[in-house]
Amino acid sequence: QVQVVESGGGLVQAGGSLRLSCVVSGIMFRFNDMGWYRQAPGKQRELVARITSGLNSGGSTNYADSVKGRFTISRDNDKTTVYLQMNSLKPEDTAVYYCRATSFGTNYWGKGTLVTVSS
Image 1: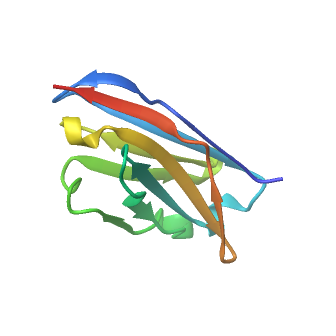
Image 2: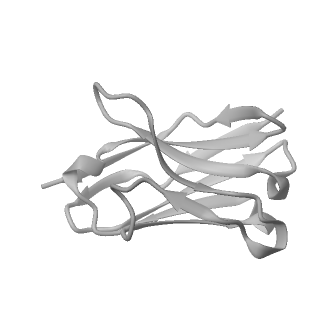
C-alpha cells in the first residue's frame, strides 16, 4: 500500500520560512519523480515544484515562476522523503500543499498540509 504523508505546514508571517516534508512508502522511491502542488481557496491545484528521480545525482528540478528563487525542492532517497524549503513567503502562498509521487505512470497524492501566510 502506497502512503504519501506531508507535514510541516503552519502559520507564518510574510517574509518568513517553512520547510515541508513528504514521506513516501510502498513504492521504490528513488526511481520515482516527486512533486509539490498547492491549492488556494477557490483556485485550481497548481504545480509548485518538481524533482525527477535522478538516482545518484539527486534529480533535476523545475519550479513555477511564482516561486522561483524563493522555494527549493530536494529529496533524500535514503529517507524516502522529499522536502520543500519555502523562504520569503508571501500571503499569496497561502494554500494547502500536496505532495505527489509518480510511479510507473500512476500518481499518488497525500492529504495535504495547510500553509497560511499572514500579512
